[in-house]
Image (spheres, rainbow, N blue to C red):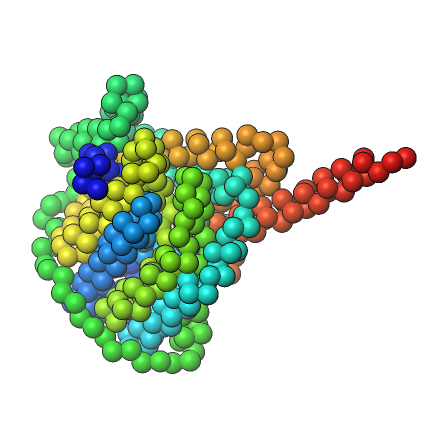
Length: 397
């Protein structure tokens, strides 16, 4: 395995962790604040989340030899930031355990894996392109914020595609980091938090209103807004994802780490696309090493916790946006091409893509779920209409 490890795997894994933390760690802080956790408990949350993502990513990637990357539930954290106000921490932990139990049972029964197979490939690719589109667009929007930095990264990206394709994104990250450092774009390093993360368990208690009002919605948004697009991400990259096994492992990790703050783990989508795309490796068979590397980095971040995360937070936003957007350009282009190359089903794929890009949300469930719902409905409608037309044309006069 180590003989196949490349610098591009390490770069993709590091960028996935960078994007994962900088894009949503602020929401985790809001959830921690909502439940009234102490600083020691907050550090425990960060440790549990980092180790949970790291260990499950390592286990699944190495076992199945595909880039299975896991993540915390970002929409779940947003739900907790609102739903945990005035909820005692021990009852919140009870809700986390309930969610973990539901995730584990979902994996063991296998019903979600059977459901995911009903999604046409064109819709899967359209959904992935729609989810990633805003990240690709953010690289260009960042030109307004720091023109020189993003322009230097863009020139490096083009040069890399011409002369050192395998290490393009690593070059973009290095040039962007050096440029931002020289320009003084990083935040105040005095704000670095050097405290160590230590586990601190909270014994759960169970309240039926909290289980129904927090635990059940946490499970629903995690399944709809994280596990569904995460599954689609791997399918669109050409893999057959181990859906049931991943749900079982992430559910079990939630059950084990919930008392320490690991509220919900699931398939990654956006960061998984970085590890599963051609920028990680030209050979799809060895891209799992990128997600394995990300797993190691997640563990290190979990242990180093507060210091590493505060370092992420002082990085200039334009640097993060530029690296993420450029790293995902190839995946976005490939997904759009696969989604729209056949005339049949193009309307459904376009509706799926546009809905995912729109960012709509109903009943606390994000655009990724509704994009699939709308796309499947339109695809079913047009498929039935085409079948009726073909039957009518074949009927003898």
